[in-house]
Length: 174
Image 1 (cartoon, rainbow, N blue to C red):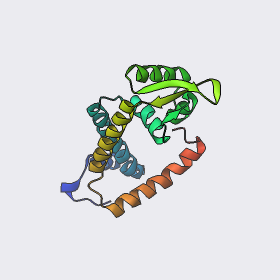
Image 2 (tube, rainbow, N blue to C red):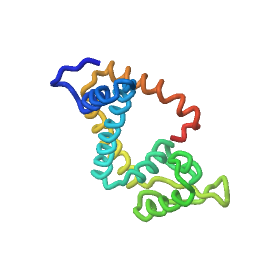
Image 3 (spheres, one colour):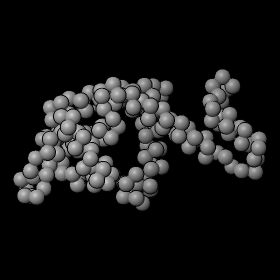
Image 4 (cartoon, rainbow, N blue to C red):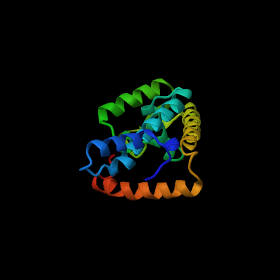
């Protein structure tokens, strides 16, 4: 890819250095994946900022959004939360305990299973997760501001194509 010197980024410099040092290697994957990696770091920072602004940790946001996406009455079994967040049973129990202590969720008996429990968002949890989600989307829009709508759709389609085989091979676990 040809860039003017003024629009060179760190990846351009990295690729040029590798091409100089190892002309025998095709380093073109770095042009895509090093940028994806760098973008991922920017996204992580934006996510942390959005969550911190609303007094949430990343793991709290993950659990609360799983409940929020489930629709009214915003409740799931601990097992469903495990599947949605990909953590161990012990970790999920600890997370539910901490969220309940913070007043963001409640536990109540599952009417379908006498031994079962359901975890439900409280009004505070709903308010907090909705506000954090709005903040996250604002920050994500800022990250994408250099692309037009058509370019964003094209990038989304390309990334989808790239990720589908990985999601299919691991059952979407990552």
